[in-house]
Image 1 (tube, rainbow, N blue to C red):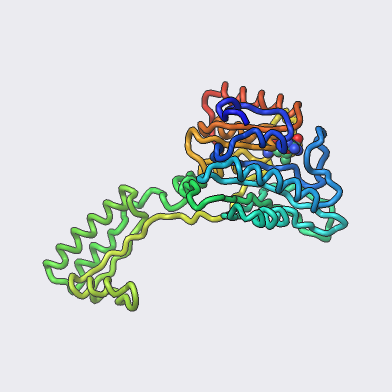
Image 2: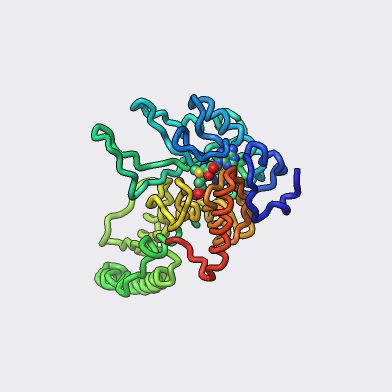
Length: 340
Ligand SMILES: C[S@@+](CC[C@H](N)C(=O)[O-])C[C@H]1O[C@@H](n2cnc3c(N)ncnc32)[C@H](O)[C@@H]1O
């Protein structure tokens, strides 16, 4: 074992099967990684991926997964991205075989399968098959105390194109006319206008997304269960205001192109954008993110951009050198742009 401080913001050249053993229990906040896919390519260096049988591959992967479970804190999360494989025209469902075996360790819960929808999947020759265009990112936790900032996931969408679009200056205007035309008493009308002005202010200040107003004699009365309270309001004061809170749905899907980076020597990088959104959701500034299959360094680069600390392990020294350069260039890029 070595003190975690010795390996922060470093890439270890080596086999993660051995190197993970040197990391202490409960010391890392999050693991985000993409192991080599089964029988996909020869990386060299004797790593995982080219076993004779898929069962053997899964067994090796689960051994590494167990080490990841050991090293994460109780608040931590583990994200494994895997691709599938056809053998003799038969889809093996490799990612799901892994997820099922990982669950059998009884040390984790599978929280989500976040599906990456590839906007530009690799074209395939076979005309009698659809083109695979998705990959799972499995999110595991080992304790119910896991850190999870759901609002941070794809948050720019909320601000740019979702519910938080600028409210119209006419918001709620029609209700002033309806109040005026209504059968409400002068006192009730005065109160309705007052509350309408307040709720319009809430929309303008972004506190709520929108609202509806129901006025006695003009709108159909609400009925049943929860509407009971509203019915009483309409009867007693002549109106009710239903506030609509902007809470865009956070779905388990993320769209992104398959990325290439100019001059990249690594054949299988995952998109910075996806890692950025996952890292925002599962970690805070200063947290430690580990990638036991670092490849070209994507996880480390995103950690650097988001002010998290990283630990990378990569068996192939050429990739380690490439990743180190990528991280250095990223640090020199003062804008540290995030992908939107
Ligand atoms: C799919 S790639 C990861 C790519 C990475 N996510 C990126 O964006 O660049 C898997 C990497 O794992 C490395 N690898 C394979 N077996 C390994 C092992 N036992 N220990 C450490 N690294 C290994 C391979 O050399 C390869 O670079």
